[in-house]
Length: 193
Image (cartoon, rainbow, N blue to C red; front, side, top):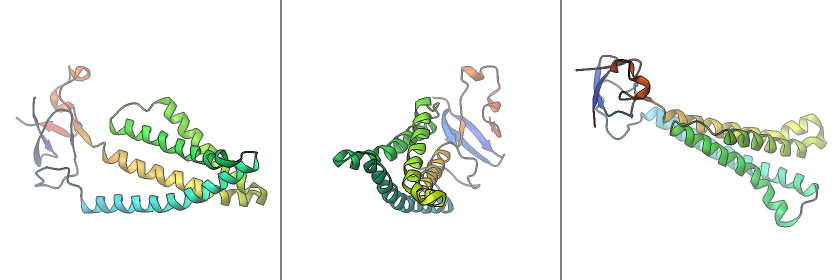
């Protein structure tokens, strides 16, 4: 295994194996080990996760009952009426997880995941709008708010997770970089002797 020694902003030499992540925002003197995360970043992630869980709990409860009432009003009964609303938010969740997995592993996002995510978001908004429609446009907007806040906050949390996993990467020469010098592989980084 080759090891490349890189300098971040000409101040901090770090040995990096090809394919490993290099975090450009480490303070001078940081020696690595264990993927240290700053207290501020940890606070942001934890508080965002707590907010998303709170919003998700409230929104999921309200959205479920809105969708349940719409499904029941349109002919479904019993267990079908109780389970069908869960398929909507389950579709949003599973599609978002595929998008997250692809981002974390630097894979292209499957088109099906994008389409199903959009379909799930539209379905949850439609069910909530339909529930409030009898109260006019304002009632429809108020009824749609829990679904919009759930999807929005959840996607923001996923964005934080995705971006936390996509730091600059130091790569060894690959097929796509054969004719380039090694110091051009990661912009802003240079190989030290």
